[in-house]
Length: 357
Ligand SMILES: Cc1cc2nc3c(=O)[nH]c(=O)nc-3n(C[C@H](O)[C@H](O)[C@H](O)COP(=O)(O)O)c2cc1C
Image: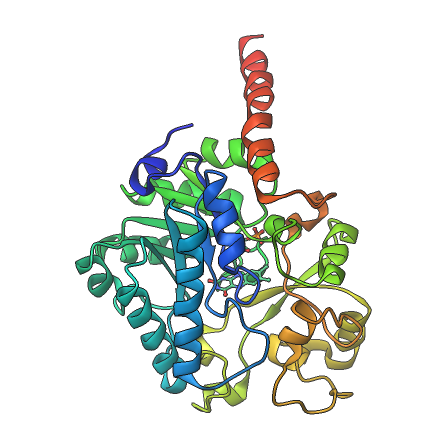
C-alpha cells in the first residue's frame, strides 16, 4: 500500500501511531514500526512518577529513543509538544535537543507554532510532521516547510483542537489547501476509517484511541477495559485551560492562554458524571483534574498518571476519543495494523461494486 506518506517516511503502511503522552512508549512505538506503520514515542514515554525536572525528562526521553532503536531498525517518530511559555518551553526545548542528539528520524510537533522548531529540526535532516486542527494552521505549517501535516478532528481523544471541526469536514478542506501529504486523525479505528480518510484526500491515518487497546500499550488494564466498554456516547469534549492560566501562571498546562483554549475529549465515567454535575458550565479539563474530593496530595503522581498508569478510574477520568465505541478487542499492534490493511480490500470492493451498479 503506497501513498506519498509511505514514500516520505519509508514505511510499509500509511498508519501512524498518534502520540499519547505517557502510554506511547518505546516498546509500543517499536511494535508499530516493526508492523509496517510509524511508531511514535510520546513526550512523557516511560514516566511512572511525575517530575518537574527538565533534565530528568530529557534523559528519560533519551533512554526511550535508545530502547526503541534497539527494538526496531525501522523509522519511528518522537512527539515534541511545543511549550508556549516558561517551564513548558524549557521542557520542550530540552526534549527537542535530545531528539536532535539522538538523530530521531521523524518529529511530530503538536500544540504550538510550526515556527518554533521546524527549521532547526529540518536542518538536521529530520522529517517533520506538524499536528493541526484548522486549515489556517495547515497552511502555516506548510509555509514553514514541514514535510506533512496531521489534521485531527474533534472526535479524537486528548486535546481535540481549538474549533471542534470534525474529521469528516477538516480532512478534505486541509487536503485542498496544501500540496504536502495530509494525515487524518480523530475517530479512525478500523479499515473503514482508513478507506474513508483516503477518500477524503488524506494519504495516511493517525490513530490514538484504537492503539490504547492493544497488547503492547503499557496503560493499565482498567483503562483498556474502559475503552472496550465505551459506546458512541461515552465521551465529552471539555474546555482546556482556565482563567488562572490566562494570567500567565504556569502550572504545567503547557502555558495555554485564554485565546488558545481548545478542548480535550474525555471519557464520561462515574467520576466524570459527578464532576460534570458539580462544575456545570464551569467544567474545564483543569477543573476535572481538580475535583472537590481531591485525592491525597502526592508529589509523585497526578490524576492523569493515576488513571493511565495506575488504573485508578474511581477518582479520575481518561482522555479518549469517540472512536472508542468501535473498539471491541485487544489485539497486538501487528494484528491490528494487518487487520486494518487486510479489511480495507473488501471495503474498497464494496464501494467499487456500488459504483458499477
Ligand atoms: C490518552 C491520550 C493521550 C494523548 N496525548 C497526546 C500527546 O501527548 N501529544 C499530542 O500531540 N497529542 C496527544 N493526544 C492526541 C493524539 O495524538 C491524537 O491526536 C488523537 O488520539 C487522534 O484521535 P483518536 O484518539 O480518535 O485516534 C492524546 C490522545 C489520547 C487519547
